[in-house]
Length: 592
Image 1: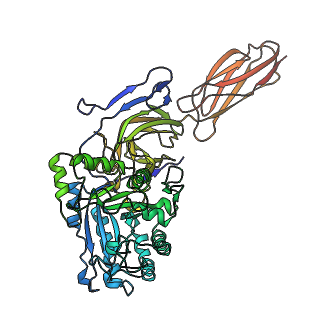
Image 2: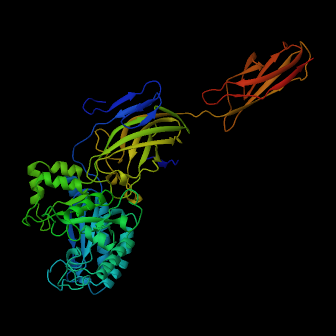
């Protein structure tokens, strides 16, 4: 029987996972900068450099859905078996899906096309993949008329597409801006330039119209998703982020990244990567190639970068492993098409032959690995405990979409799952080449027992709770394929919390007569539930008179040895494994 999961608020020589019981006193881990008390356990982890799948990153395959004659047979739907083959055989978790609306340049999108789009998203979800999506109206002409749609039609179509976007955001990785121009790349356009015969001459009014389309896409999408532009200069011209003299583009930084603004939600794609010095006009239009690249290198710390390699033969390509990997790292690439625009795998296969393809597969997007962690051995149920984990990203980008970070406690005795959100952790700021130190003080609101500790980075959307959408850390003996958890290789013993008590005392006769017996009765009560057991010590000031055992919460002591005078009598309950001790108020006993 599968037990419900609960959310709490508030080895072998080959694998080299080591566990060290930290010694007496406070231990300072200089590499991480955290301190913990004696009895904590330091666990170190070994990297796993094999190639494996992870969501929202890596190589992808591209496909297209057309509407040439505005007939249903024009649309070729996604095939679940093909998608599953990508994942199982090539560790690919993304596709690029371009929806061509060429049949609806002068009309609304018909319901049958929207229905087929929905079926595609259903297929993606069933196959365990996501998609980078783009919309375009044309891909056939380099002379006017190109065949794209007017702004009013684009905005009308976006209204129709909003329910599709909202209902399927879980399997939408990012959106390439599209809609304008040939292939949706914003260049060869009939409507968003002053003169279609001069597509490079884009007026301020044209940029205003392009911004209206861009912001229409952003408004149509949930705020968790980003839209990518074909060239960096489109972004700083649309948003007016050229500043200074000479005017240079201003990139995002940590203070304004991921704040939900239009600028923070606008990223980049390059569909002529490594082609020549300018990548076919990607760089060097408004500022120098070097300034464009400096801007993009800084900006893509916080927004996605993806695309495809340019066709061979453009001139001065940089397809060799060294150049390609250097630029993927420089611009923080998250995803890359296996094929070039004409469906050639020549560059991909050349990287395979040269031996660098496995490293590119590992490092496209994020590649997260645990370095070490410090965890307590024991904690009282309901009590506080502290953990620290050091995690390294040696991929080329940070994760690009929001994602929770959870500590999971799995009870060994029953399999029950308790989830503790690690509040304040945002993987989108786990930048390429950095090491993160996560330190948290948490409350063990779980029953007594023995618990495995696990780290879970699930998809933010509840519809994608399966393990195929959780992030796998690049460590040996950590990943659990059936659960999507990363096992931290540590067990935590949660002990029963002691319950508070109150103790009171009464005398059988007060005042009493010298050498006449007096019986003192102590009553010990739980502040919550249950009846305390154990001994009670009766005292006269600091001197012990005797003891009595609790029976049904009461203990007695009888004495006739009190001297004439006044005595300060107390009952002291020393506690038990389940109950804390307590001391009664002073009873003033007078003996005549």
